[in-house]
Image (cartoon, rainbow, N blue to C red; front, side):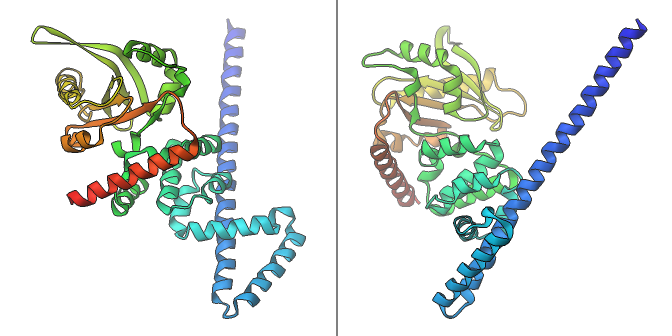
Length: 346
């Protein structure tokens, strides 16, 4: 018995010490990453300032080329011209040092390299902050950019000042809003649905590929129930899918529809949401929110119904993806139309 106790004590001690070592190694790696990123930003800023301050631009550029050669000779390939130019770009597109300091606690230099080529400042800020708050790997960040996540979120369809306000709230208080979480369209190509299928086929396919579906919904979603039964006035109603979002702290009711959106879907979803609010909502939670997934939207009906005020999101789903060029055209067109509607309503 004493021998067994000694073995257990030894194993626990080894586990505890190993945990401390791994924790410290992780902390050191993060500290090194953060220090390098800030150093690269400061190098880029210093060189950019030199070029701007020099009244003879060409002469200033010659000085920079000479300095870069000397840096490479002294410190190696990490400071060759290609990398120094990237540092200069880094300081140019992330002009606010405080934003860099905030992001570098979670983002590595490789994360920043993925963000630098993005053309729109708000798009870059969105990916940077979402990457920080959701702790994306570099690979995940690249996949999100590639899938045009920003263009598919509701936030991208707002005027610039409102986007800035929401990103600022996310940066300063980690405040995640539904417009940062929900997207349109959703890519459901992984379901492998071809030609004709029913709502049940769609639901069954989602449940078979639940992990991929949750990945497409975004971080923070947890599956609760399928075909959620609600008895109202002695009549049975069934909600297709019920999820919970941890950071929004609210239930998410998802209804699957084939074909175009119909105005009658609003009343049906409102009924589900009010029932969930009365019977399922827990203390400390926000009111439930609805997501109606349709094969196609009806833009005018959706606009007139003012669904946002009812806590309802409408999104299209794509079971087969178009070419990236066509998708970009459609999303940019949708963004411009939505921004005009918002500006006109104001």
